[in-house]
Length: 548
Ligand code: C2E
Ligand code: CA
Ligand code: CA
Image 1 (cartoon, rainbow, N blue to C red):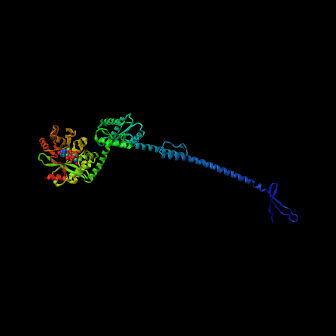
Image 2 (tube, helix red, strand yellow):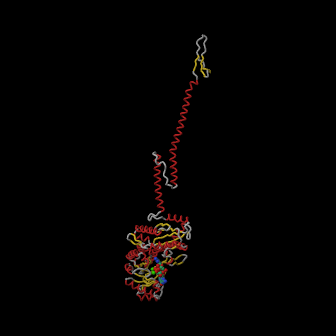
Image 3 (cartoon, protein in one colour):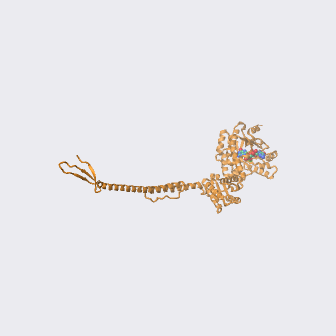
């Protein structure tokens, strides 16, 4: 049986001893001495320590490395983040760092920076488009508004003025001479305005279409008017472009701060209101007047009402007989419009025709009248009658006019020769070339043509000879005056002679009494029209009058 192990302290070390008991015969005693435990484990302890140091060092190195790595990555990412924030604030000026790095971060930063430069370029282009007029290179309406706003805010210079101007007949120039010419014209005017402004403190802008604006700051109302007159004079000089000469003119409106308006938008719109009034009155530049507001509001409401008048059948066809002096028979009548207003009663044409002409609405009105007349002419009772319909300048400029009239003739089964179209001398002289082309077309389609209000315009005899007209209508102002005014009588007589020499028949309108009628008969006038024969009457009354 093996003896158990025992620990014995000796000389400071612990020994493991296994003692084997002696047997009775005195056999050998054996003591097995084993090595100190501390000695045995000592190398292992050192190893353990070494391992711990190595692990700790490794951990430290790892932490240091990943920290460094993270820094290399996050710093450029943070810079990119800051850059995107700058871009979103609209700041495209600062280039990115890290552009010269040779790694992926560098590639990324470079492509990001290219994007920044491209966006900046596009932004600049968009801003240019939004603030500048492409055609003339002038500031546009937005830009101009900002400039006026800033001038008002500075305010230190005292008063300022905004001039707006709208070129007359520009649409016509565009139509006749072409868009390229129109563009050239706008550029020339832009240059001219810039030249006029010269050293004066201010700004020229193109507000759109054929409308320009000038800011004069500082500027008193009196100085603004003087400047506006200079602009008007300069535009009156004929412009030579591409061997063509065009006569320009413009409506010019003025509004002054702070007298006419306190804020930029009111100032601009009041300057434009003044401009529209100036265009209408043709008396040169006008400064804004509060009375203009109500006038333009009235125009607008009148226009709305006029639309309603046509839609709801408030217009009436009135007819005034034209009697032949040879046989005393009314072969013809003039169609005159009346407006049966539900509140205002019967509105005379002079209260709404000029509005309708200004706004272009006259074209609807003309077609309405023409159709009403065609409807009447299609009835058997009107057989042999010829109705005169008034055309305005706007109608003459409408290239579709003859087609539209032809459609109505066809719809009602009426001949063009049952109509006479009255065109005032001034409508023809507004644009002689175009008028001539349209008159030729209408005459070719079989309409009789008459020159209305003859004597009030400036048409020359040589010019009249070229036009395919059939009739001259002497203006009522001369006819009504001929009884007592020698000059009027002379005008009537020579007009009759002139017309006959040209092979035209003559109608005298405004015949208010028998004495005038006899004078006209003596002068060889062909037809008469006037209160002496009859006032204009509603179509049914006229038909009854015819049959009496
Ligand atoms: P207008 O074409 O010169 O028409 C003749 C005007 O003189 C008519 O006035 C007529 O009523 C008036 N009148 C006729 N006889 C006499 C007379 O003996 N004495 C006086 N003092 N006046 C006489 P109304 O109907 O008020 O029309 C005025 C103007 O309105 C017309 O002048 C014409 O320019 C325009 N107008 C009327 N109807 C139409 C229309 O349907 N279309 C167009 N575009 N204009 C029209
Ligand atoms: Ca007439
Ligand atoms: Ca007339």
